[in-house]
Image (cartoon, rainbow, N blue to C red; front, top):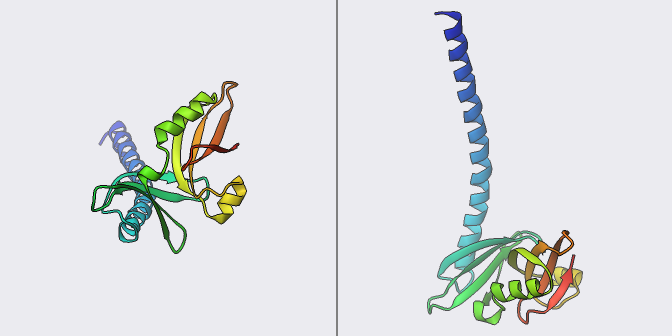
Length: 165
């Protein structure tokens, strides 16, 4: 073999090895996250009125919570938040809370360019940190008119602003 063929072959082998190792590391990282979500989804189905899940989100305002939206056997909408070790599920009917678009409109009206909204459950510690007795809360992340980024927390039951950071 000529020297250039050896160098080309060696370079290709090294590139294949590097890509393979990178892909394996990425897959291992993603697979462990998917397993957390899958077990939380199964817990939500087993410990709440949910019969099917239509949406999934993550709320991080009071520790990591897997949030699921779905329907019960009668077609009613439910939110279920799963968190903790051992896991606990907290559920509420969709109609009992203000919709995300209502909260987005309220935040926009108060001058926030909304980037994202996340529904979550607050335990007693989270409630005391935010100075509220609301169990269900909307976390709104956005950009103010001055260009700073801000979190605004709204009571999910009545839509009132609770705290801004």
